[in-house]
Amino acid sequence: MMSFNDYIFYEYLKKTNWNIHNLYCNLTQTADNILNFEIPSGVSCQLSSLTSSNFASGCKISAMPILNGSMSYVYTNVNLENLNRNITYNLQHFYEGYKHVDVPFVHYVNEFQDKKLPLRPTLLYGRMHLPSQHLDAIFATRLSPWLLFFIQGVNEIEDGVGDNLCFNWQYDTGKRCLEFVYESSGAMLGVRGLWNLNYRELNTKINMENKAPSNMRWSLGFETYYGVLTKCAGASLGMRLHSGPSHPYAPFILTCTLNPIVGHITSTFSTAEPRTKAFSAQYDFNIYSYESQLKLGIELWRSKQEMSQSTNDPTANSMSSLLKGTCSTSGDVSISWQARIRNFLLTIGTEAQLTKIDPLFFGVHFEYSK
Image (tube, rainbow, N blue to C red; front, side):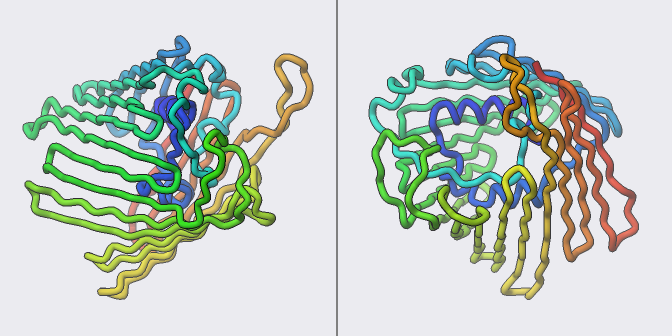
């Protein structure tokens, strides 16, 4: 389940028309959401609040095995006034699962003015962990309709290594998206790229929600990085085939990635019936060792009809609970149940290794937002 701070950051990108699906790092996002969902650690409770249209805060307390917590603050000059104040009214807001790939958006010069956005849409985020005094921070800004720049910082007070900064610069034209990364800890330099092969430029003012005529979309991408201090390098290639918005049958996403250095190939297939169920499969194979693994995941949604707060008329069905489960040929089994109970979001999960004599891992997470 997406955290409150992640949801605010996602809304910031959405309101500034930044397409996260056009990034190579999100090539397998849907399969990862279904197959590699996070199980809560112990028992945790989170309280969050959108105190104004530009400011949000939150605190989190976790127990079992140890007691710790954190405080976080988010500020953005992008107006979030239209964001539903009672965010927990619909579990769909925090849902992390099948995400259909958005149609590539063609940016244009006067985009910020037409969308009534600030000249430099900016977001600031900070979080302090207690009692470890671990600090996290994010600074993100849109330098132009085509550019997004953000800095992630991590500070370990008790760690002698010192601070770690990650600089990320993204350039998106719709047809292609380039990403340049620099990490200070190992002086690592990285480049990512994604190209949409059958992309056709439409009207520059078309919205991402509008339908495109093509029923199939191909994307190819790559990633390469090198650590100057660690003297280590890596590379990967990837492709993605997904159905277009006007596809007559169930939507699907097919991906394949290759790491030529270690010889690892990963292929995924995901499909869904909107607001009912989703399925994903992942097959890993190593061409050097011939080792392989198959992993399957499924989502089952439960929806109920909500009443409009203004007219008391029935509205579209909203997600009230979600059951997720995965299993693999290596014996890993994970189950998670997420639900909305009044203004609370509840997540209960467990995972186990069937081929080993290991105890079950169990966690519960409560979240209240207003």
